[in-house]
Image 1 (cartoon, rainbow, N blue to C red):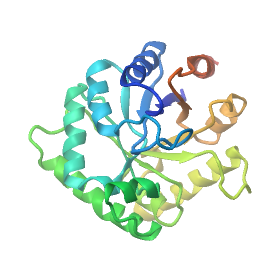
Image 2: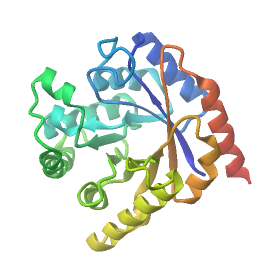
Image 3: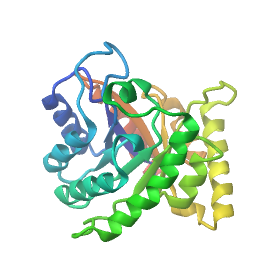
Length: 264
């Protein structure tokens, strides 16, 4: 059965709204719920209300009880790799073993500039990510107590030369977008193509491609593409919901599709 995940946008609302959205996603039966790792809104008023990712996730790990959750995805540049591993392990214990460690190389320049991080280049940020992931894994192996659950690593991004290689080497989950920035491929073609590239990297590094779950981000209004995206190799489809109202009507439609497909 293809999973349905919800990304709750932590902007333009109060903490109580975000908490309620996580609890609603859990109550409705969503498979996973995520939030993003930025310091400023991604849409609307650029200086509007916004909350930090890992502080939220620690609180939400306590508030929820069954749903798996995590950052989609944490920016590697914002925290020392050993610290990030320890934070993830701690939230994993708070939640009873339900945490997913999503990680990516980062891209939002304002975050870097205003919080004093060196932005560098896309290449340097990917190089840093490649160096950081083994350090995170090593720290997770040393921490006492160790993670309570499986603490899967999810790598986000679609770069075919580096990101998908790192995914093949290290990740339990890959998250990519159904959108092609060049406009040359349809969402279905995009998913099929990226999956093929990742499979090829798995063959090169000696990894079973079936060991890596494929999570695909889609526009919440793209339900008409759901069957084709799933058939193209998506193990999980992620849609976003924005506050403060958080439209769970659209979430219910996606969950109904999941359930109908699972029983077909």
